[in-house]
Amino acid sequence: MDESDLSNVLENEDTLQVLRFDQAEDQVIKLYAVYTIHSYEFTFINADGTILEKIDVPTDEYIPVPNAIPYKDDSGLDLYQTWQFIGYSRIREGTELELVPYAEDGRHLNIKSSQDLTFYAIFKELDDVHTNVLDGKYLDISNNGLLSVKSDY
Image 1 (cartoon, rainbow, N blue to C red):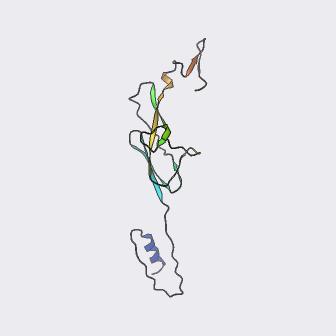
Image 2: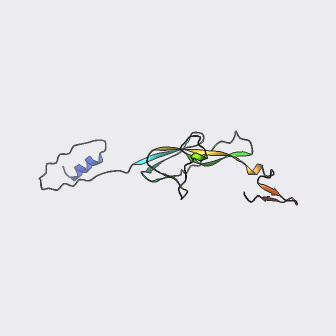
Image 3: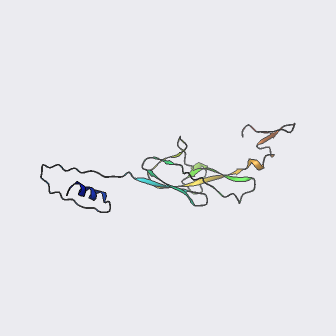
């Protein structure tokens, strides 16, 4: 068996073969280890249960935030309300307390890959400033009728 035969056997992952070498005792035989870095699959689920994105990440690397933008249907809310995406949780219907923190770069979750995981998009109900402008929550109205945005908004 020459080097090319050995190479073919090593690349065939579906077959385990025992190799017999009929070589002289003083002859050197080179063996090469072949390995791949394991990766894990991360699934990001939208509010309606559809898959936003699946991402494979090599072992011990930070999990990137998906490119897909999470969305939650707001047709059941009042006209002045909407849903605001606040992050990902490993718990379906999670709250702000169960959110997975982002890494410092803001493009990765602060978790390193070590197992397959599923993350769920989490939303909170949000009042819409555009249809509530005169309720005094977001704007000040001066005595001369001028509107100004409150400093905390």
